[in-house]
Length: 422
Image (cartoon, rainbow, N blue to C red; front, side):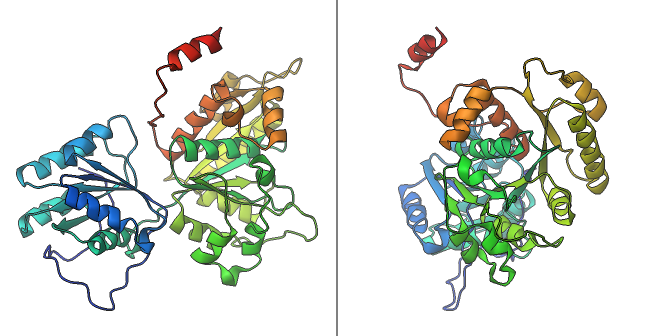
């Protein structure tokens, strides 16, 4: 069975004209891919994508219907929403069963069909289809169907919060967080935001070469103003898919917060961003503990030394007790291989933590130093470096995206790779 979030609707597939006061809440930043059978439907979805309520959604339209969708997702992650057009009845259920074998959990499916049959509608709902819309459709039909997936009271939050924290100070947790967020946005094509929670000494603005006039301090010190529009104004755009909620990194005020100080910020970001990466400073307070425990996935960054081992074990034990029904946290070893420094190897770490590190990142002072001083990511200055691939591995594990579609190279790519190897 397809594990999509089910939208609760009345069992009435008949199309009715919208009332004059029909309100459609805007959709958050989600990815939508449509597979159409007719050019008319494709044109309608294209027109719907220009509606203000889908202004934040990334919509991609292809032809080929269900068969094309099943083939496309054999080697690529599925988006937040799939829109499928079908012109027959016999292949609808079979096509959905085939699609279910390649779909990621959590993907919502909207079917556009031409059969007005309550029995068929019930069977589609039983299989987990979020909505069934009768063709021919209008742009408003498409807008309403997609937006209602995320505005229904029972709909699950879109955003996934990933928390990154260092086992101790100076282990490079912020650098890892920023590069992993870059991989999530660039390689997995997920709209993401980095929230730099180290308000006094945060480095996200430096690492992304951004100096925004506003940031997370404006939100946390103005809790009454927090809403989607206000948070959008505070975001600094780094790339098409990556935004930054920067820390002020100034010492003109003291940053003491209550346990729930960031809750409204995180909830608002969840409603508008598919992925939120929290760069949590190395300190232990009520709000940092709450941010860790409340995250969907957690990455602990450790150095190969005794203090990191002890602290990582303590964090693991705390999170396992506080999150018994969640996935285990992940951890990585960073700055491994410092010359003449005694280190605890990955095997000993894994034995103590009872879990292997997701990656072991070598000590590379030249490339990491150059990236930091230039305000760039490792992938920008060394796309083929081994750590770039490691950041992608971590991004895939944290987001649950096991596959990524990489851009195709030119016919000269094999020759260029051989020259690089030489």
